[in-house]
Image: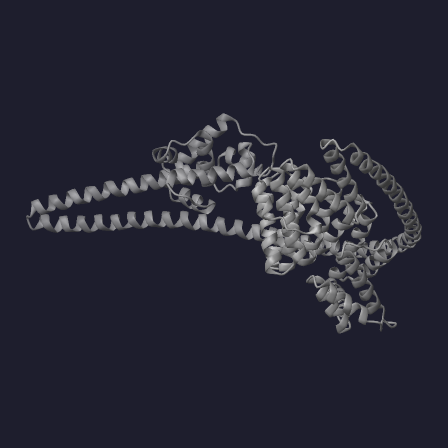
Length: 581
């Protein structure tokens, strides 16, 4: 009872703390901004966050506001490179036991690592976030996590893993029936199959993305899907299909260049490539376009243009190398500062963890001691009850056997007594009939009297035989030895012992062996199980006497019941059947 009270008290404390933590309320403006961000209304979320300035001294509200700010940057593809802020959110919400916000914090921290090109740590954070979200069954968060994991795998060119992540994201979005999540999931599925060179699947998902973008008025998704379809059809040289997805926009100049180059219209291709180069603000796209312009100019034998584009290509590539070097320097410095801060915090956390583990170990040791003591007391009680039950069962079985034997003996004696009484009655009637001179009737009664005398002698002989056979069995040294060594795994019976046991059982039970064999041709081991069952041995004792496992003996008994009766049954059914034979 004391153990139960302690457990109940601990449960009440945990529930009380959980209730306290779940009672936080945030300003409605932040809640609305959160909802808008989750459903893809980023401009609305930005506006709401910009209107909120009253952070105050409330720590929970402050951390929630920071979470939304970091989340907005992450959703728009511009994560903060401030690892300490994202990590502080993870640390705070892990202590608050808020799985939803803790998972989001881990997701944003992973996004920050990915922005800093630390893909391994990014994946570790995504995995932690997935574990938290899975335990709490947060399917919307799981959808975002799978999307970020897929993008991370895309960055390291692990396309097989990327496809699996995008497929799971699509399944979660379909489960939630979230149109915004589906608008994000479908284009990524198309991109995944494009990289796997699965043209049919890529076309299918791009058409689906175009339809979703048109239905929910997400122009970026629709336009990107059209461009991807055009690019695919250009690559497989289905130019008529590609043209129906191309629009005359500056952003599509690169695809128009590919379109005309596929038709060997080099002047038009050079025009659109040059237009793309002059309008793009992405240096990486500029490098790719310059490569195409150099190839087209060379094919047109325009050496002057080719030389011009090549000089621009070298200049732009050098500037990109310098920019990458500066960015890497900045990221390395940020990681160094973060690692220093993290090391200090980890040192404090390890000390606190060590003290916590010592307290938990002492508490656990106390609980284990109480449980072991309670288990030991329970074991003693069960053993005592088991011994009492076994003794009661043995006494009841012995009483039943004695009653059955006594009842059979009484019935035989009653029948013999009734026959003797009938014989005396017939003799008196015969005397009267002879005196009256009716000799024929007297002869008839004499025949009946002789028959009754023969039957009585037979009953008495049978009773005498069974009595002698039973006495011989009970006095048998073999049976005494078997019962004395019940439970002794070193005791073994010889073939002569088994033959003697068969003779004794057949003598008592009217040739039990022959009657069993008439029902089914049993094996020698099966017959021996029947003998032991008839003598009342337990399956465990049978296993020792037969040098088999208890499970094998139990299975043998069940199969023999099916052989002898033709239907399935239990161990008790088998025992009843043998008892009735």
